[in-house]
Amino acid sequence: MEIKQETDIHGGVNSEKTKTNIRDILQNNLHIHTDTSARGNRSLSQPIQNAFKENGCRTEVSPQSLPNKRVDVYYNSTPIEIDIGSKRTAVLTNLLTLQEEYNQGYIDESVLIVPENKEDWGGKSWFKTREWAKNEIDKYASVFDIPIWLIGVSP
Image 1 (spheres, rainbow, N blue to C red):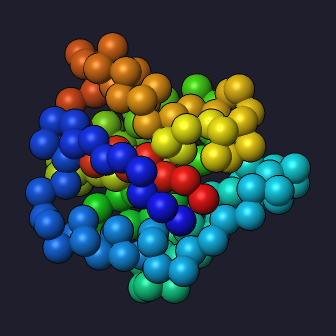
Image 2 (cartoon, helix red, strand yellow):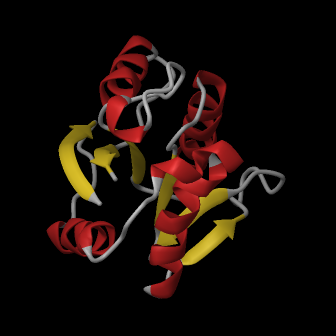
C-alpha cells in the first residue's frame, strides 16, 4: 500500500512517533487486491484492519460514548477509521462517532484512512476520497472540530 497524501485537520495527530508507526504499518508489505471488491467493500478495508491487529492494535472497539457503534482500530489511544469503499453516509457516520468521543473527552485526536483517488481502487463512482473527506469536514466545520489526520492511500 502506498500513502499518496496526508492532511492534518485541526492539528491532526501530534505525535510524530505515532505517525511514523502508522505509516510503517500501512506501507510494510500490505497488499490490497482490488479485484476482491466484488465480494463487498469490507474486503478492501479488512486487510488494513488486519495489519493493525497483527501489530498489536485493538480492532472493532466499542466507543465509550456510543457503545452500539464500532471503531475499526485503536492505535494506542488514537482511533482509526478505515473508509475504503465507503459511501457518503458511512464516512459521515464514522466522523460523527469520532466527534462524539472527542466531545466527551475520551479521545484527543483521530485518523481517517480513505482512498486518494477512485481509479486506483477500481473507479467506483461512490468511493469517497481524501479530497472529498477534507471538503466535507470543512463544510461542516461547525460540527467537526476534532483533530484528524486524514490519510489518502492507494493499494
